[in-house]
Length: 459
Length: 103
Image (cartoon, rainbow over all chains, first blue to last red; front, side, top):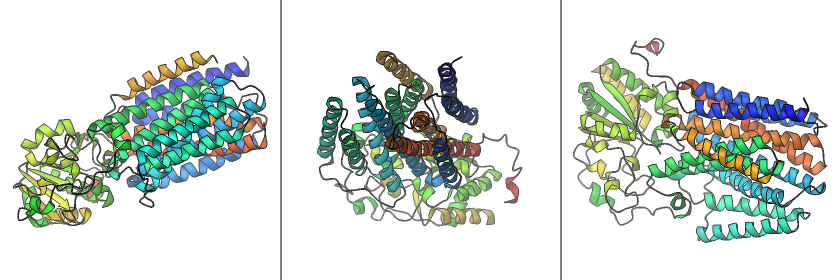
């Protein structure tokens, strides 16, 4: 068996393991195994690749792998679960940049050997474009999520973006007409890098789940494009699988916000308080409450629904929520969690945070399933969520019109734990806070939950 | 590889990916993303070949950097996914607090 056959067979096994791995990741019971299968596939792919006869020197491979392993292990073991979206964004960016560099190296090599053709050059241009957009887009997403830098202000962003796409196509065409000139390749990378920044910068925090999912898809497509440059079937297949899964998640996220991808990427962020006066919504109608009062309500409740939002993550309140849940359950109260699809900063983020606090995933209920049950819920606790429980979304017009929401206002009593009446990302007042069955418990999410738990224990 | 064959592989894999992912429950969206993200680090395979070929100094430098970046993506991605999934646990059949009671 030649080394090419060995590599080819190894790649088939790796592709099968990737497919089984992704399939496994789709069910809670098989997810751990699925992840291991994927990792095994990767290990096999790497090992058989080392049998490639073109590889003449191994020491620099060892250096690269050692650095990458060190950094990867460090990041993976140290990250806080609240920061998971940033980490995924960062890894996406690394993957995108790696594809650009691989595309560059093998394109230059092919041109130098006189082995380039039209197909290869187009693939190299696509790799450069997708990879560079993924890289800088992910870095901006990272700094935004980290709240260290909010990106640049782009005047007339849609026009700028279209112009940058056109310029990228021009540089791509120049690459095709003149493959020997490396400048065109780098100019294409530069232009696409700027595009990644200008597309991602104007996107607000609430739209981050969509952006992260999309960048995930792009990092896969970049790998796939690099596969066309390298003539490597495994890169094409694995990249396409990831690209497709990212697209599905993007579609789920945009649907959950009742928006389209074009709308998320190219519309201006909604301006605060558009047309609706906060005073007219809240004046004289907001009831505030205390931890003691909430504890008394909870003591007699049979069913409690907790609706967490990103505020829970910011306040690091997940463990306090777990303690409250345990006390209530010992009291015979049924506790469920209503999770909006875009709660948190990436798809499924809230579920991970609650899992970290050892809350059973069976208690985490999807929006469509929990909504019909709010009628039979005694107390709904809204913790750090705002727009996803705003009844204004049911109206025909407005910034969040048509967005599916959690129907907490149908519960007998709604307790909203929040620092103030300030609006959420959509910038509009929330009539829920002024509803007859709603009470505000002002304060830090974690402290408020701890106080309630303490009061409950003293009853 | 024949370009049409390569394109066929790509298209079939996209459809397969859509089939595999479309029924994943929201609970697993984050691990799914970080796990699939690790798989997209498959670029590593290409980077290894480019880096080991030593065609020119430039291509070697570019490719070694790609090896480091892609390895970070792969190792970090699978590891953090494993860490996350280890925290997920099914709804326990109410046997009240084996370990959490002391807390």
